[in-house]
Image (cartoon, rainbow, N blue to C red; front, side):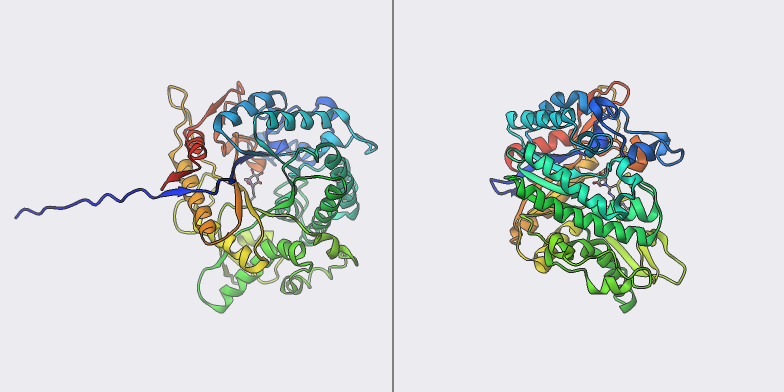
Length: 468
Ligand code: NCW
């Protein structure tokens, strides 16, 4: 018997983005700049941390990294070649604050001034993050983010930057992922400054939030014309089963990852359940009268960095797993989401991004949103011709941009998307062992090579969309 089969080829679906959509890429100062002793920069907590044996894979440090401080003009040319409409970078506070803390370091300011002008000349919108984890070591020596004073010093710094760049920066993020600064820097100790303690993490959270609010006020007072915002690493937290216990575990983690930041900034209050969940640890006495009014100073947009959803369940007493990050009396267990993972071990699940964007609109109102980071590390290597073929990263970007598109169709006011990262770079505790870039960096020569994913992204930018 002969069986004939007809293969039905599905027509590709074209996804087109709003005409004003920002196609961006992001980096952070300590991860790319190098030149840690140049032009009056002072040490940051990451210089100190990376110098401690056992902290960073391979003993790597950001001392040289991609050499961007010297090569920023070449990097802006590469951004222009990709066709980026916006570039998100961070300003190294230790380049601005001189030793001893009096006055400002003019040479540090000049660097960012030149970078911003170079971007504008290339037709690329500058998006500046004031704090992407590189606290001046001198401020850590007086308590770091567990000290309220640090928030006040941050406000001074924000005022300086607003006065200098406020006429040209298109969007500001006060902080990048304050959850990481607080919970990894002061909770688990896996990030700089390497301090451990749940109360430290909660205290740091509050002072970071206070710094954010003061920073927004300072930028506004300085006449900054750009969109004022903050970048939160938010995620969809999902219960493993439909049980009440697992739902409660998800609620607790959602409180300590998402709502502990979103609620004070967008509603002017801490989530009552999260405060209650942590009562055995602290009476939250670090919150002073007026702080929440400062923290909830209106922002112009909400920025989120998304990598993966979290899948959690209630755990038997004593099992804390990855939940050691979280000061929650009842144990929570984190589970791998079924499906592919990146070289970071992070699950690839674009539905988490769509759900997150819809959730922000549902719970916090219809606001301008940006995805200020999304991307993937893969162990990609150059072929014999030097080209880097990274189909997994293309698949990751395609899937997540489709999720962004879905959210836009559902009515979310999503205005831009930034790939993490423009360049391979110093991936914090993982050193140079993880590569997130659209552009490969050869760390021996500092040569840059646009990867296949960079070419794919560039095509998507040219067409303001892509075929799914
Ligand atoms: S580590 C991290 N990242 C990566 C980093 O390169 C970038 O600077 C950050 O903004 C890529 O994007 C962010 N995020 C931390 C995610 C949480 C990891 C949780 C570990 C628990 C032990």
